[in-house]
Length: 269
Image (cartoon, rainbow, N blue to C red; front, top):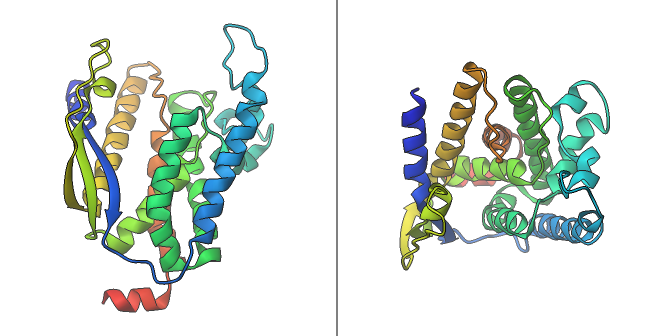
């Protein structure tokens, strides 16, 4: 695909900011203990790291997160069995760069996780989430080893959360989700300093697949752009784990078959 077309499509999608508020599906099986525990664990880990590791003095040319590097997903280290190896695929899932990174991930996890946990049960949801984290890491490590050399670290819960979104997409693709739709030009057009136009969001009931696949499309376009850069002998630092997102989503859509309650399947017929 032409890189110019990829950039145009990505900017077009990035302009529209979709924020899911609620869906029409009610939970039937009580409190979402695992989803709540995952959110709490991510918050506790972030607070602990932010007030210890992130506060440590470091050289101006060194990243503030250097202290958690051994716990990050670094393809080169995993492939060469150094550091924590494959275990870093798990530890990196509970690390976040900043408060915005954490809050964005936890919001999406809370929104989709409760409904998927209701469809699978508590223990099964915990296993599903963990497996999605590993499939996200597998995709990320495999692709980034080729196109970036495998030295760029990755961290964050978004890969595993993408798996939860994939499971939700499989279960409830046509479920209506109340979504606030607005335009957000600043992230899409960083070349215009200080320019950000956000009108009053318009609430719309959209099918779940619209929200989820719009996120997937952005990741796919960025990933394709990185691949095109690799073909030209260049490395494009994305700053976003797009291949982890895609791997996690595919894992969620696949593994939900193993964990979905039989009565949920029967109820969808």
